Image (cartoon, rainbow, N blue to C red; front, side, top):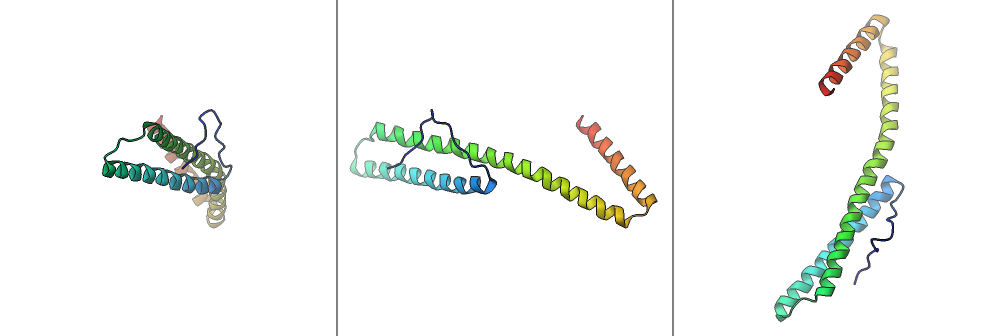
Length: 129
């Protein structure tokens, strides 16, 4: 029916954002499959007026819970990897923007812009501090 990792085994998370996204899609498909199996079994049980096998139901719900935990870990890993990649990208963009603006501004306009940026930063730090 389905296999699930033991909670004793450490979860191996992909080391790239794309790897995490691929695994995230697979986990979501696996969770949908488990939910469909639970629903199908319940409909069959109701139709046949039988009781639900508690062992099977417990295993299915445990598998679903483990998949949900993996989903949470993958989402956190994506955020962690994105933050690491995003910071470098964002800093490079800021450097490029400063270079472009510096080239387009004369010294007086540049100093005025730097002063305004420092004042804005000071104001924001006071609001958040």
